[in-house]
Length: 466
Image (cartoon, rainbow, N blue to C red; front, side, top):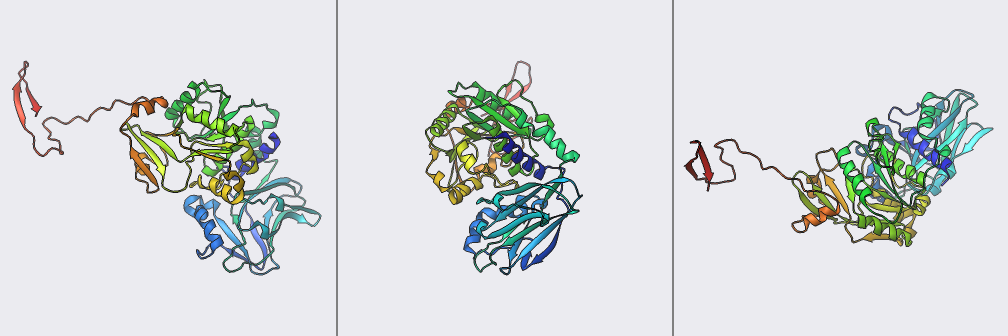
């Protein structure tokens, strides 16, 4: 893939989700036959919308920061428009980024950015058939205000939503600003740098967890594989950069940690710098077996575009318990998904929603089913268990107890062949120290205790539990 294209994708993602930035001040300049619903309110009887709502509860505040709230723009008549104004400085070039979600792209008539009729650009071609849309452009400003106009072809109809959800966060960054140039300088000189090609990339978003991450990297690099494998670590804390410098196939790239959707989208983008044939998504406390890596590589090479699993192991380090989990519903595990580069290009790499913090894995299957159904035929769901979720003392979204009790999962504790399974992931069972009882304390789980007094050589009393 052309690195200059990747530059723009990464630039949009970084600028839009930079932790230190806020929304650019803007106002709704004018509106004609347009209704603004803020916050968006939907009715479940709307068949088309309820499908979106099943995915789209992620548009609620619990799934994103308040800065990423949406306003619903809906037409009340055929002749309609709404115009946003952004106050700027004449003579400067600005990078403008919007984020929209639409229910029916065929109903969008116009998305224009302009000063006047002589200085106008259409952005309509950037709207695609996915729910995930950055709309961005460089705009050379001639006046003190930049306008963005939306028009819809038809008015809203009963039982059918055909409007636009516009994220309240809008970026309008002067390309001569310090912030813009700092991001470009630090992160976007990819076009001038040559990256080695890897057959297979494993992408991991990291935030601390150095202890388990070291285990993961050591395990992967201990395998003898029939292909060239690289690992892309997308970090957010400076302390995580180049932490494992002894590995020459581990590469570091930066992204803000929030929203998490943006960070995982960065994993996708950065992985493409290495021109891989396929990409595996792996969490920073997930382990993968050699057999799983080889089998997924072979299946993608045979013509499959997606390799995934719906069953896995979970190891709880605190008590040495090993579990096997499967989904009760039609769903794929996020960890261990392997995607061909052909598939990623077809999706324009948008397999994560960059403005949310939760429910990240649900978008992929929905995107395939609704927008790229041809890839359902080239999806391989493996029966092999080659992914292990390693739960320890570190911070994580879902602790072992939560997953064990999850209603959507069927989780069983394994009693046999535990050592063989752990050996596959190079895990050594920890020796657990039994809790010590204070002297003369009766354990609460015993109904009755009988103590026999015996005299030792040191003439001290020792109590023997019968």
